[in-house]
Length: 319
View 1 (cartoon, rainbow, N blue to C red):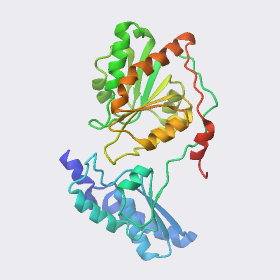
View 2: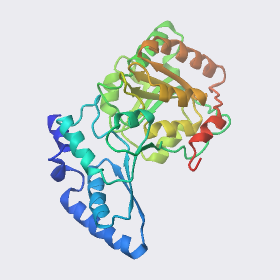
View 3: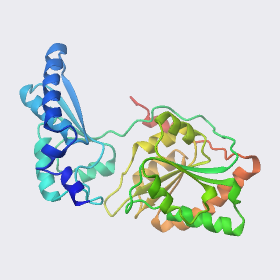
View 4: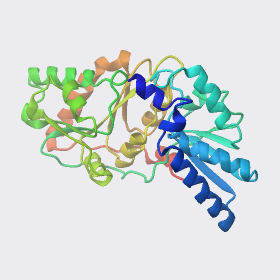
């Protein structure tokens, strides 16, 4: 774990970052050729890795007229994840790397707040919703299926309220074991199995990562989509790409925020009538929410949902 904190940290990042020195050299040479051959005037780089920002810093020095947009999908120094060595040093170095950028983009208001002071022009550019969901979705399934796709972050996320609620509903007979499926696809299958060990094996469908198209099909056919986020005091806006994939399906989202809450996430999900967002202090409601959803599904083998497409249209590209 300590070595991972060094990998993305200055000065080690020059040798350990994705691609390394050879990649940066080749990328710079190729970019110079393209800029001169095609009259490029705007160039975009995105973290992570740092390598691309380092390449574009050199390009900006050679071609000062370039409009450089430096994007951060993730925080380079995250006070909650604590994933880099000597954060004060990393902030000092990171600011120097992007100093010549014309704009810095962040994917949420919360992330922008964390980057305050890194650059004089920081703008929020959320991931886009690539398509509006159907007006109504009601996939018919043999089992009440709760689906989670993607990575897991131990110590930050928790699925415990869902597992506890399902165990109690199974014990009471409110939910029948042969009608329940908690489904996971992603690189952290072993972690998910550990987190859900209290549930009967027959209720679990856990497998490694699959192709994006297959994951999207699973999301569209889910009864409920599970989103696991985290927050901390003055720290919010963990808006992963998964959120927008989920919203595009039109299926109901049950989002659990491990922490004091995330108003930005709540604003997006609740305004779109896309499901529920429960902070730590509210997660006693998970059992009742799942029981209601199951009872609705049990009537006809489907749990119909109609999101607010007008609210979601705000997040389409070029709006």
